[in-house]
Image (tube, rainbow, N blue to C red; front, side, top):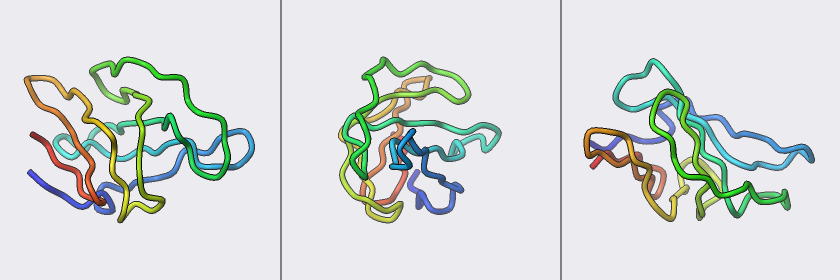
Length: 98
């Protein structure tokens, strides 16, 4: 399954200095919860998020390396475990469940 990130109502998460430290978007399978991701290399000069192990469930969070600075160009350095042997990837602005 592949879907543009922009269709999942993404929003930037802002840090204390107003820079983008992560994003959240609706789950592409269930649409009843959001997924939050914090960046280990945030945009706009913010301090990095502390790396964490992804936790399954609604609203789970992870700290990941990324490239791109818009929702249309964003890619994550690794995938997020999403239960039942599924992983969510974001590549070039598309959310892919594999």
